[in-house]
Amino acid sequence: MNNTQFKAWRVEEVDGGYEGSEQTLAISDLPSGDVLIRVSHSSLNYKDAMSASGNKGVSRSFPHTPGIDAAGEVVESATGDPAIGTQVLVTGYDLGMNTDGGFGEYIRVPSDWCIPMPAGWSAETSMIYGTAGLTAGLCVQKLLAMGAQPEQGRVAVSGASGAVGSVAVELLANLGFEVVAISGKADQAEHLKALGAADVVGRDALDHDKKPVLKPAFANAVDTVGGSPLAELLKQIQPGGSVSCCGLAAGPKLDTTVLPFILRGINLLGVDSVEIPRNEKEAVWKKLAGDWKCPKTEASVKKIGRADLDSALKAFLKGESAGKIVLDHAI
Image (cartoon, rainbow, N blue to C red; front, side, top):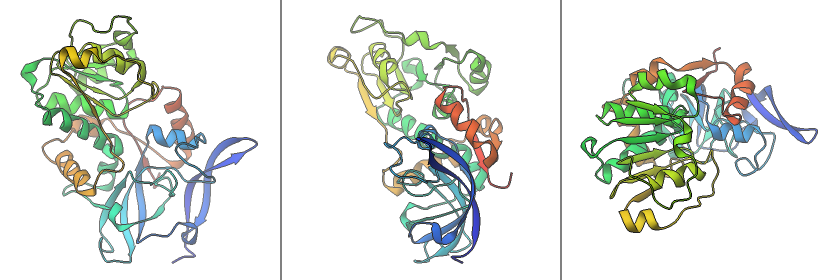
């Protein structure tokens, strides 16, 4: 099967810059691994956009096929687990970073990267959630583990119109929380309310204030953007509350003081969805396919083909992307 050819959206260095295009590859071009998967769907993420732009902090060498998420059918399995013919999904680890990812019709990966497709899900459904949905689920799970309850008060979600934030909004609303969606995209307000947000406010709610602590506005929060907005959010959490932190679109630097922590006893909870053990991923996937299902997110997904990847990824980098976008290799 090594001579079998397939299509992939591949990024190359061109004239000092980086350019992505559809190319024809062979199975033999893929890296070594236990499992060969025929990919039917992938999911677009900010990290994919960074890889496509040549960010060496994400992908060290080019040409490279991005796509940190992939779902499809096992066609070769050196260990027999997962079995040939089964549907699996792969997210995180090194997929789409330095290992060719889901923007190609085939991937080859270690067997322990593969998650059995949750009961009742198709490959497309799993990729509606993808790493973004998994991350949102992990953020909510950490808040619940710290004792977050709806009766404590409002829960904020920053970057609410993004891929992670939008799932977090619906999931928290479904669990009975009063959700305040914080978004810089005014045109997404009605969509966020449809997902379950009780209120939608602009990103100016997290504008810099020189005061080290502010009047408590939220019981808990999910932060998807990092940087200065996270620093401002920490100032507004009520005593004993928690913030799950999972993103850096606003920058990796956190300029804050210890005062919210030592005066109010708040908790800053880091969330990693990439290298955590497979069993922890699988547990959250099962919840998302079951009691934590987000039907409004599923219904609002946008599907694209490989020809649409370039513009969609550039929109991510410009801050113009919203909601969930799924790559369907059949389009």
